[in-house]
Image (cartoon, rainbow, N blue to C red):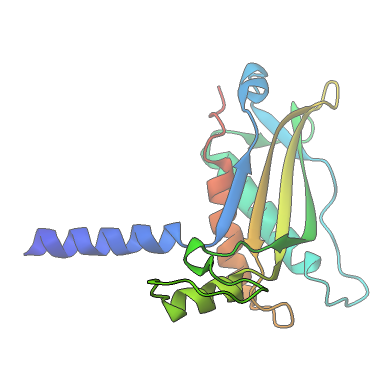
Length: 192
């Protein structure tokens, strides 16, 4: 009984993580691994909100830097601008993505027609219509450059569909950034 309960909890946890809605696209790590890097620096200084702006970048910047620093430290990399062998930079941008209609809603056509012997699951059709529209995404690209020649050695892009553009939940933003950065740094080799 106890093992069944633990297995159910583990499956529930894995399902929740898998459904986080965060997409991570990794670049090839061969160039990074060949560099035998140990130390890094940030390419740019932290952002300071001197004008009291409500722009999300001022919320994202300190969280992102903290999470990247923590993730790289866990892999054995040291933040040392004086001995840095690679630099870390990021770009944050809003994007738009077209949704994709579900195959179960393939009978939705601007030209009405009859489809005999077809039972349509209305919930699937409604979901397909809701997801088929334009969706706003929040995108963060992390880029690692070799300090010696300023050439890119690795990059990763993190994308999350924005659910409510008018209301920013700082705790949710922080959780999503933590999860995204963790996923992003996972394939990166450890320091040697």
